[in-house]
Image (cartoon, rainbow, N blue to C red; front, side, top):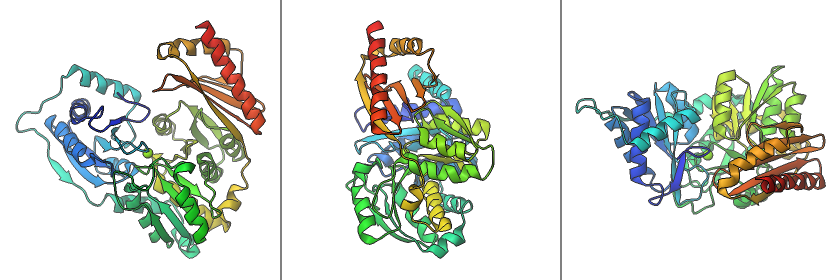
Length: 449
Ligand code: MG
């Protein structure tokens, strides 16, 4: 049931109130009794599913505190502060509007581990739920100050006065979702002039697709350029990610904003550690090594990064899609915190965002999909591990082959009957050549499977 990050599906088709009810009963049965924090983004069916989550949890004896419409990182921030034993966020993150979903969070606010997911699935499929006695059914309360507390938390980690003096002009595209409730307000409180695009909450997402990738945020890029703003910020549907646009209207790749923050955070303490999935590239490695930091690779997925940060106390985590985890605030992806860090960087360094980005080396990449029948995906991975055993590689998730001039990563898709090959090099030709090498390896393994 659980994918890379939670359970998701099309509303009233494969993501139904029956599924959500029993999933919530399973969560309450395993993690309860105790107080569970819940919240939702602006998606269609959000209120309906929140009510079902409330019924499921309270029937098992858990009490519920409902934070209403807030970003995922706001709920995550509040879970330990409200003394919750768990959390449920109703969101499908960056998926298209017909989707909704659920993220299950532990008492520290981090998405639950894979093992806990499996235990919840077992209870779900067994249909054996805890049923509270009539006088032990849970209570329901509402908490309206989550955003106030969360924004104060973010501001405690940045130089508020320096940012205020700079009076930056910022355009924010909120994707008609809950990011619009936090980031425009945060930046106004930091003395910025803020113009919001798509800031009215609307679960049909009329403004744009909620994934903050370049093709979806062209309006933002254009608005930044024609209005002479200092930067643009775009969030995904639940505002755990932020994508940036420089003052020329160029959209920064996620690994660039992550690298900018990493180079500054890691340089503060010699011997810091950076946690990142194997899908991250040389740029991140370059800035980490330059700052005297160590790399700590994980499998692909924000959940793996968060748990590693929690276990090791590492200084920073991040993903190549622009997710940044800043543990002094909280060890989860946080779009508004990331926005505050980029705005602070511009204010402190007295340079434009494009000037700051131009300090980074450039790499090129190639992405290819190779069809592999679903039933062959696992045995093919075994063959790939065999074929590459004498190469310089990382095998935490798929196979990552490392050469001097670049690298490629081969992984089975979690959902589709394909293998993905992602290659990176210092030139486009190198990236293409590495990608061909990767595809050939997959084809060879296919023949042998
Ligand atoms: Mg998200």
